Length: 185
Image (tube, rainbow, N blue to C red; front, side):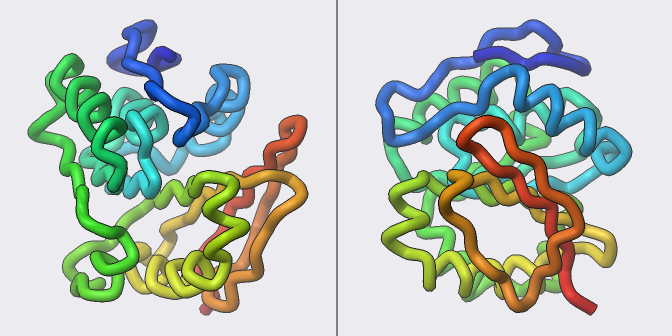
């Protein structure tokens, strides 16, 4: 795994140590970030189910101001923290290791507005906890800046309707789908 563009282009980052996380391929990451480029300058990014931080770190490399990584798996957290330290991004990064559902339920949304939220749950997690993810979608909508967006990556066979989020684009990459969502007005 590596950073593919920006300040840290070509820098290798530690990959997941197990199949609990599924990294995004360089080809798909390049396509995704080509779409996101206009949104990244000085952005506040949330990387939910961050794994080892590939999406949030790529965002920081391409000009995001700060990334908050949400990861509860201890082995993934250790690799994520090593990746952040290797790139000397501690001042621009926060790692939340508590349950992200509890964090979003209790956090003051006005104090925590994000420009980009990567919602990338493990595929089996999505199937097992679809209701929790839908509730999380509602909470995320309250944490978006006025023009903020959610990037929702999932298996093409799965998907969710988010009453508080409206899809404005979607892209399929083999068996993977990426939906682009904004808060409903």
